[in-house]
Length: 206
Image 1 (cartoon, rainbow, N blue to C red):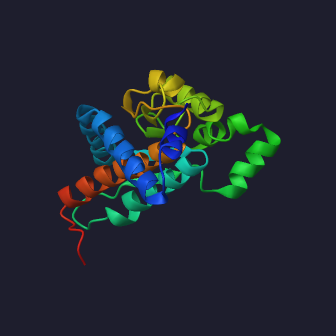
Image 2: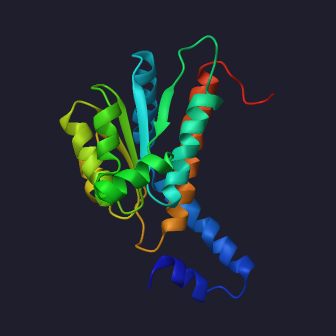
């Protein structure tokens, strides 16, 4: 039985289920390699210092986290005393995504965007619970082959993205744990962005 199903069958009430779910989030949090977080922060800092760009991409709920990360990078981390973080979410342009899906196939919606936008030294970030989404794997392979820095955030066993990425933030989990892993993607996004924002001298209070 998958972890979420097991939690559900063992819970007598929504409150019991919530407590079990929160315990599971804590376990996933403990499984993250802090050194990988360090490398992720350093990659963002390097890209910013060199005037390079960050391209985030994902599918489904993970795409919402990718978009949130770009919001926090561009708007939240902006500071007059430092170069801005140049970041784009490739999932956000519905016109481009649907045009490419219709004309080229959904497996090419991110690779084709990178062909037109990415330069060597840019950072390409893919978020995927399975680590095996064909459109993300294809885009990540393109990024590697054309001189970009690569980063993946994954769940389950890490999948092909975990193998391709230079920096891998991995949340090992069962096959049905999309919700908990996407929750943790949001936590990781906030850890990275609040650190970078405050290091740049912008405090989070208004």
